[in-house]
Each structure stands twice: as structure tokens, then as C-alpha cells.
Image (cartoon, rainbow, N blue to C red; front, top):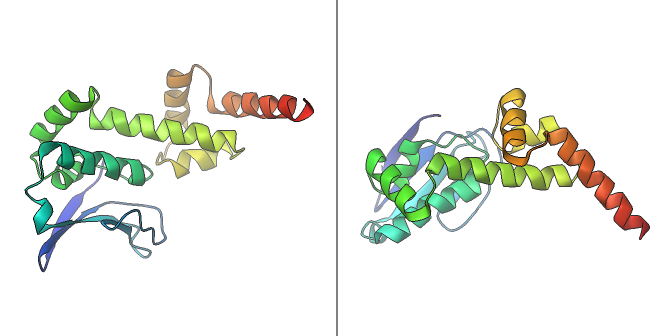
Amino acid sequence: MGESKSVNSGNSIIYYCEGKNGGIRNYSSSFLQNRKTGKMCMEISDNTMGGNMNERLENARYYIDVAYHDRITLEGLSKIALLNPRYFLKVFKNSYNITPHQYLTKKRLEEAKLLLEKNYKVTEVCKKVGYEDLASFSKLFKKSTGICPRAYSDKYKSYIHINDLV
């Protein structure tokens, strides 16, 4: 999926995961996206290093929720949770009954549906939710919803027009 790296900065550790969308976005006090590099970063203060397992997993899950459109790696998520990748995968799945990759895919597809409902083009939606290959995105969308993205968008357009008439 991509690379992650960490940088020590004073009393905190900043984790960077590979990103592709630009613009400064302050998701919370601990998440930022660099305008020039497009890299998402999460700052973890020393006082959160001893957080309980639920907090660590929630930090990783929240990162997926806000950075779903970027390249997210198991290694990057495990660093956010301060766990080794294999153990992180195990405890995430045990806690949420879904793997981090499945959670990311679910999040991306939910966001794709919302964008398609707002009449975005399928190619735009594909890129905005973090997929680079339109064919793969369309196949995954159809497998999840039962219809292709274009048909989903058209179906929603029809639904809006009928409601506008009533």
C-alpha cells in the first residue's frame, strides 16, 4: 500500500503515512495534512504513549476515517497504535470484527456512495476516495452494492427527481 516513517520531534513522535491529496486539513489537534507533500501526519504526545489498547485502536480507526483518501498502510496504522503490525492486525480484528483493510474499504465505499449521490462523476469519486484504478473501484463497488457506480448515481438522480415532483 505505501510507506510510513516516524520522526522524533522534541517530546513527541510524528508519524507520516504516504498521501496524495493536497491542502492543509486540521482533522483534530493531532492530525494534519501537509499542503506541499500531501502527507498525513499524526502527532502522538508522550502522555498518550501509555494509553490503553482501546484508545490506541481508536486512534488508528480515527486515522482511517479522516485519511481514507490517502495511501494507508498496515505499518503506518500499527505505528499510530504503537503496536507491531501482526499484533495490531489481530487486536483490531478481534475488537471490531473486521480487518483494518476491510474497514478502510468499507469507509471508502460509504464515501463513494455519498459523492455519487451528490452527482460527482464516477472518475472523480474513484480518485477522491483513494482508488487509482477505475476498473478496480467499479468492480469493488458493484460487488459491495450489487450495481455499478454509474447505475447507483443514475438511480439516485431518478430518486431525487421523483421527490422534487411530489
